[in-house]
Length: 65
Image 1 (cartoon, rainbow, N blue to C red):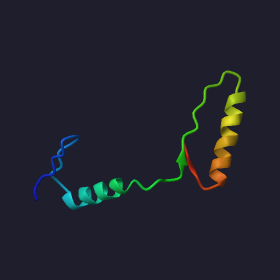
Image 2: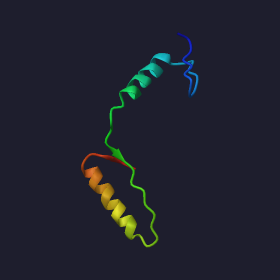
Image 3: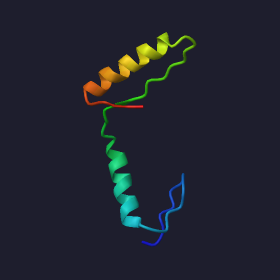
């Protein structure tokens, strides 16, 4: 095999075994423990709540952005 050309996305010409390994991992769809805490604040009160939520998630070993 010299090229991986799916009907969507990029055409792969290098590191084909690595690309196939990634596709195999993505196909399993194993969930990961991660969260995004998104907020908007004017007076920082919402920011304080968002940071507390993020701390709670982190204390339970959940990756947070």
